[in-house]
Image (cartoon, rainbow, N blue to C red; front, top):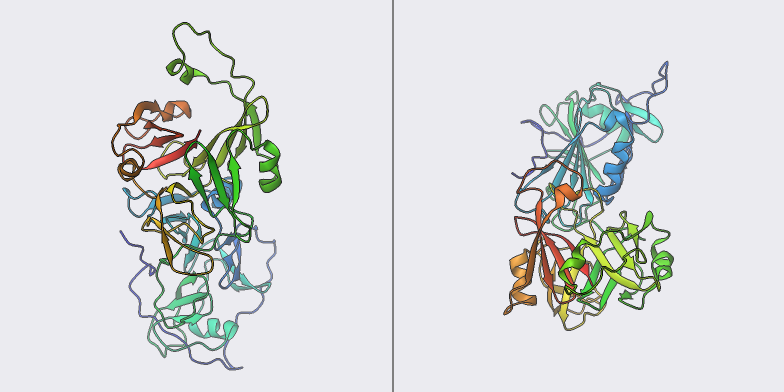
Length: 416
């Protein structure tokens, strides 16, 4: 079901001017300071309270875990069968909704229904909407100045909706939407079709050559390849900083599938993982400190490992090798990329995290059936989930292992 940006049927209005006689909200003094979770600082086109546009879902959910006044929330997926591309809505009581782009899982709209019991809005250090209070069209215009006439009160980076007619200065505000600045102020506000830009220092996407290389693309940097059997831990720490955790590999149950009956069990304690959940990947290194495997996580809603990792967008390249490119994240999952100089589109034999396993196998294994094994992922994660939601399938291909849900989405890809 598509997101409705209006919480209820309204007749929206917009003020065309503001004068010195327009009533404005005055600075309010409270006998006790407001809890930081209930006071939301408004920066149009950028943020409302601690929620900043273009921020990934992962750190926002982590923030809510540690802030009890806002932690009671629900996450809604717009299309249950499109877990990689459908928008997500995080609903925070009493009336705050955070809308995330589907492919990038980055915040693209902030939607606050008014009045908002328990929440206040501040602008440039003063309270403009008190907790549970109503604010009129005249009061909003007094704070932000003139706006174009029309169905909504629009200012760069935000919209206000009001009850009543166009000329009703006392109409109450029913809705505040914070959104990225748009080049056309008259265009209707919808969920953006293009994903928000990737912030500096974060992974835009990773290009995979099975069994060989994973090339990281970060804004403002040239492509950074990491090669199996030659990349060292310092190559990752120099780019992403120290890992969140490091532990030795203890689980060698899969070895039973590769050993001969006469071979003796080999110790796996010499290899170790560097975990980067805030970037969406794990790296396994040998005793000689060389990269053995790289696991990239898709962070699919409704799966056992959801929110254990940030989404790491990936693409599997077959041929030809890509030149430096712009953002991979495209809702359609197209297999094309634009060069940085904008010189047209270069067709690639490639599949990405937005593709179903059937599409991936058509390209990577059109003739030979892949090796498949079932994995009780819910049990592995210590969750008491019933099949089929907690059961995934490991699909083995040369240089790759894909973990696939019952719906055909790829939850993670292991380059090995």
